[in-house]
Length: 111
Length: 115
Image 1 (cartoon, rainbow over the protein chains, first blue to last red):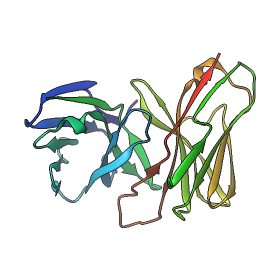
Image 2: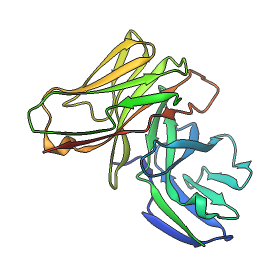
Image 3: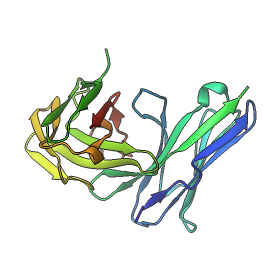
Image 4: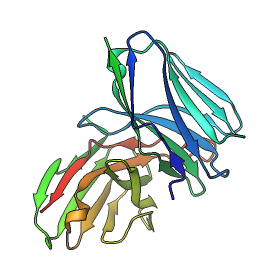
């Protein structure tokens, strides 16, 4: 049973608009949540993270929101740019410092 | 030069063959990981190592073995490859930081096809 779920396999957004990528989790012991971005033929690269004791973290165009009661987090990208087109993975840190990853969401930003 | 390198980048092999995938890092990190990526399943942890003398099984270790030859090198072996081990394999590293988020740094991946 997947502990981290990204229920939208893909998302298409117009350039300049907001992209919202969602992630749900089941394990209340996760203490950090991370987003990774992956381009074709490359490894995932770290984008932004949030501690479980916070509800928002912002870094430039990227903001992550955490709703612990709903076990839900989201990544907002504003404004979206064509270079943001990639696969986005949500990950959660569990005991023992391991990461559990979601299945990923393909984001396409149309110009 | 890349901080985390993987060799080979692509490999096609036959069922029953022994395969070794290698990972090297220049980041000076103690922790290293092997993942596989399958469509619709994301990245799943195969093995991880928190230092040279420490090896641990991950979520899907059956059919795989690893060797941590040095702090900078972590190799993954498939003793007898089977077709359902066809996947994209990633190596990653991280620094121990109990107060941090355990950001991991990934290599470019090895695409393995088992016929």
